[in-house]
Amino acid sequence: MTSPVEQFPLGKSPDGVYDMAGNIFEWTSDWAYRTYTSTAVTNPTGPASGQFRVIRGGFWAGDGYSMRAAYRDSYAPDDRSGLFSFRCVSSVP
Image 1 (cartoon, rainbow, N blue to C red):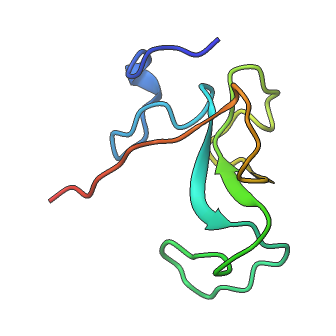
Image 2: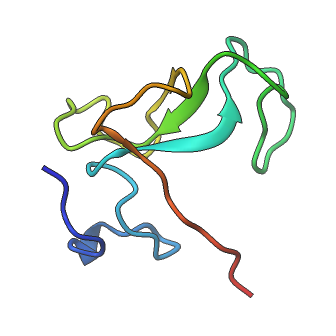
């Protein structure tokens, strides 16, 4: 079962971000790619289009491998599940 935002302050990232893993998978804006080819160090992007979108993070019923912020998988953008959500973000001045 998911939990309210900021429920676990000891689990926030070094940058102060809450709930990066263990709550729900989050859609990203990146299209999935089979082979990593980017040389970018910061925020590498995937291809311009594709069939599947990338999800990140772990969901509440996952195993130890999938319940982590670094977990990455892909699903069709029209897949519907209670395991997917999104994160609203903004830049910090």
